[in-house]
Length: 347
Image (cartoon, rainbow, N blue to C red; front, side, top):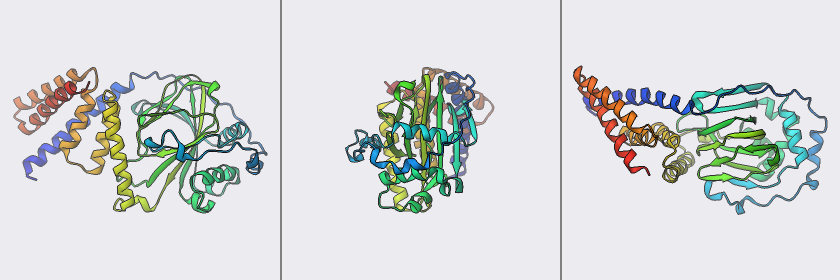
């Protein structure tokens, strides 16, 4: 690469970041941001550990191989937990420290209860939950091996006006080794309105006690909660071996993620956030700037403000040109042209 092309690439990255920050704010202000109510404090029940002995009382879970969501990378086990067990999980998790997660820049509003490390692997309070999940997703592993693959456990609490827009939980070269998210729906459908989990192009019709997993690298979101309160239990899985980006299994994992990004952007072409996530993914993979910039142009071009973005880029280009900063001006002009072209192709 010549010094001129290197300068142009660096300039375009600066342009992209500046406009990206403005774009994120635009996305954020479209969401309602009211304070989350304080959750009630409840003591843990002594019956928690006894619930693990009541497996015979459970409805039989069907195999995930018959899941209607398998094409979305989702493994699904209906009725894996009873309603009384789901309520017990909520009580147990609410003994953990609480975090009110209201980040406008990330388009999320929820309450979290979180545990990691020995607090999970050595705690008898969670043993029965993790053993049940292991029996579904890793029946050939010991419980010790399964626990070694856990990054953290989490209770999500979404109240009315809560949401979590499109996002991914891992990207190439982030060093996390994250692989899958395993969820348990803890709330009955009558207890909340809205809040549908979308994984890729599939909406997951999860009912109380259902257990399901999906790749952490796949775009997913929780729709707006329009009433009530929604609880889910999450086990975030990881693999130390797969934190090595040269591992063939890890490369295959990212290949599936890239295919999912592309399919989702094709099927939901007007969802600007999805184009943004795809662009970030390609950048994290180290793809050429030209390939990455097409996705960011899609991001801007898929919004109603596409022409405003293009005009802004063009105006910045003119200012740079008048100041004699030719390479920088070209970067702005090129992005303006791409936005207009992509806006015309997104229908």
